[in-house]
Length: 148
Image 1: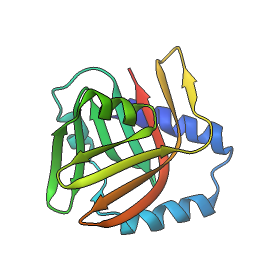
Image 2: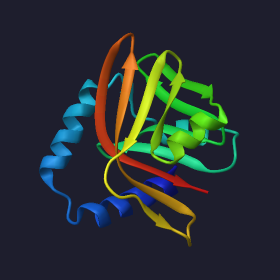
Image 3: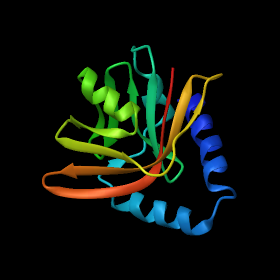
């Protein structure tokens, strides 16, 4: 949610140094081809789940949120919510895993070094999100993060 977004933005600033326009341009271009649309703040606050919260942020917006075992994503038809297995959830939370939700096959692959902060019980880093829907796969570079 907003805290996770702040952690990811801080991690991005530390990892990337100063924001570079080519990275932003590439992220925005891949976001336009993505079958998912960004989650709204209302979407992210709609869960009743508690526990650790994972997000994937691309082009400055959250595209996935996992709270407890509930994964939320949004496409052109609306908000989708799915229950993930423990293994799927752990894979996403570590930045290296796959899950299926509402006909979408999602894969997160961390790239580079992850950062962690014991004081906020959070970690995150750069990643690539690949979304396969109907046999058409699209990828987006961004940041993954989890806070407990």
